[in-house]
Length: 384
Image 1 (cartoon, one colour):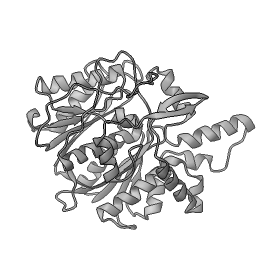
Image 2: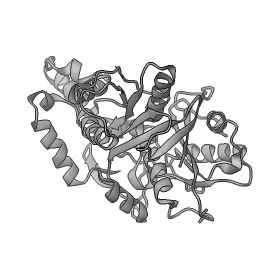
Image 3: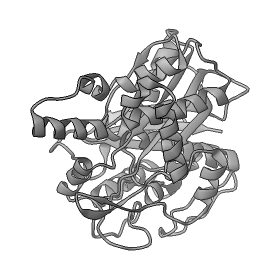
């Protein structure tokens, strides 16, 4: 990187809540926030919002007649974006770019409108504009009255970290000075759950921790989905408001064997982590927030990649998916949030059922990993 990037604020909504204090308190607990919900007439595991957040999103929907037709992914993004720019000291109408993506997009509306079409042969007038992926960034820009570029993308589970990569390119090129980045995902729908079950990767074992992310001895896949949105405000260089700095970025893609494959030793992660570290010695990495989706191959291949890069002296390893589920396009930013909080509070968050690790007194550099279907990996290096 030419120059470090300041993260001047973060905001999120997930099963953990929507305030720094609540989210951190919930991270300090060994409790999983995965519960159950009915899909297609069957009870499945899922990580859902607290009732208070659901009420706030409904109030936002009713606050403007134009918002009543929007998918929940858009409402979630608007809500966290308002919080983020306020915390960063930005104002409505400021010149900043926006890149907020999603893996699945407007899942709720797509399923509803498609069902109506199958039943009636016609569809609602607003079907197309409200299910277009780019409408997340567009509506956030409308709500915040920003004057910068608004862009979007879907790169499956690495969507939010790719938004960071894109924003850094814009900022370091001089084409923007500030960027709002992140991901929004509402995957708790009948069709989305059915897709994950068809892949045979969804958790079905009733236990205290249904998602066994970072359990390297598991014999069954245990991925669970969660709903969430998370964004960050990025600015160039030193900043008095900075809560952490991005000091390295890395990206790589595995050679595909099939549409959801990742190599046995996650070569993509080996490359992305090395790129993100740059000239920094591997011994200076204090912790890694792993992607670790809770699948057998996904968790183990990433762990093997970390072993290849770091040898026997591994950094502290953790993940948050055992607690909040896999939030697809938003997951990378929620991992960024966990890393930032650990840097701020100087406390490492363990996975309670994993082998205990020898904690370090000083956390300075943390790597965050994310990878999407097809082995599309991104690693971000955060520095205190």
